[in-house]
Amino acid sequence: MSTITIGKLAKETDINIETVRFYERKGLMPKPSRSPSGYRLYSDDDQKRLHFILLAKKHGFTLSDIKDLLELRVDP
Image 1 (tube, rainbow, N blue to C red):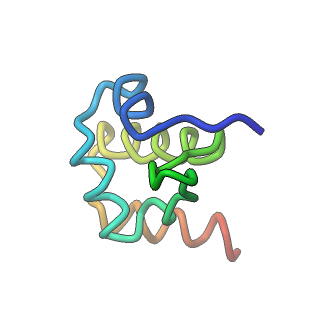
Image 2: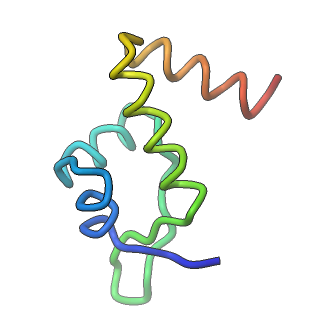
């Protein structure tokens, strides 16, 4: 499994680093693992999850709706 830093994740999804952190605080993104030096590390699944969040927002879903959808995905 490959991991990327928050900067690369933000760049690949064309959003701000603070937006990724905001989604973490709101519970939309899981707390990332950390490198020995403390950098946030995101997996391929985290990247897919962020793409889903952004796509759902683009289609008019609220953050609350998106959180509910993500919870259904994890615990049907």
